[in-house]
Every structure is written in C-alpha cells, then in structure tokens.
Amino acid sequence: MRKNFKERSPWPFWLWLFLLFLAASLALAFWAALGTRWGAITGLVELLGLIYLSQRSALEIEVTPDELRVGSAHIERKFLGEIEELSADEMRKWRGPLADPAAYMALRFWIPGGVKIAINDPKDRTPYWLISSKKAQPLVAALLERD
Image (cartoon, rainbow, N blue to C red; front, side):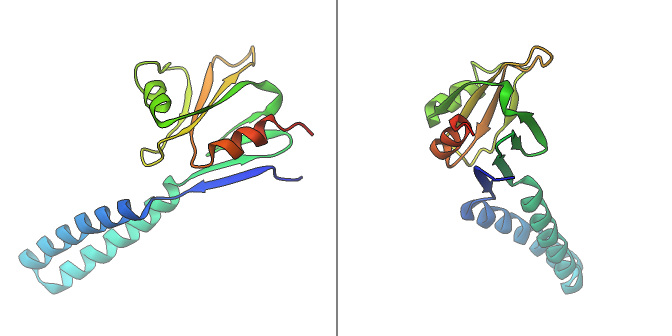
C-alpha cells in the first residue's frame, strides 16, 4: 500500500531546553538536600521520563490511499468531507470559541497551523477533525488526491 503523506511532529528544541531546565532545577534541589547520589538518580529518572514522554506525545499523521491516521485514530477517506488548511489565527479560533466538544482534536501547542476536516459518516457523531500540522498544505493536497 502506497503512502501518500506522513508527518511526525516531535517536541521542538525550545521545549526540550525548557523542560531540561526544570528537570535540572529539581535534580539540583535533590542534590542540595540529599546529596550527589540522589541528585544524579533524580536527574537520570527525569531524563528518561522526558525521553519517554517526547516519544509518546509526538503527533503522527499518515495518509494512505484508503485512510487517514492521526495518532491512534483512523478513518476511511470516503468519509472525509470538506478539507481546509487553517492559519495560526484560524486554528486559535477553532481550538477556542468555535470549538465543538464532539470534534476530534489532535493538537500540539507548539504547532500554530493545521487542518480542519469535516466528517461525513452518518454513524459517527464527530462533526470534524482538527489536526495540528507543520505541513498543512501537503497534508491537504494528499487528502484531496484521489487514486
């Protein structure tokens, strides 16, 4: 099966730096209070935890000829309705005041733009999917491409 589009959005560098700073601060507090061994153990546990969390929270989007996969969710392409690329301002509105609680949202705060996809499935009460994407234009093009 040919893949039309694939995107993986891991944590950005600035987020890593910020979280490492927080982790180092906590490790320093353990070191000051309990000694070198506990400071090192705390730092190692935090680092392993950050690596695990970064891998688990990366958003994966894949478009194949038959379906759209976003994280663990998937839908057949025949049920996709109107597809629109959203700017950062439009995404902000759809994440906030225009949001529908029944919508599926795969959002990452470090990605400003994205795609809104209407769902045309009579058995699914989800009105649309809102997906953060750094490559919104190629994603829209892949979704509009018909085999």
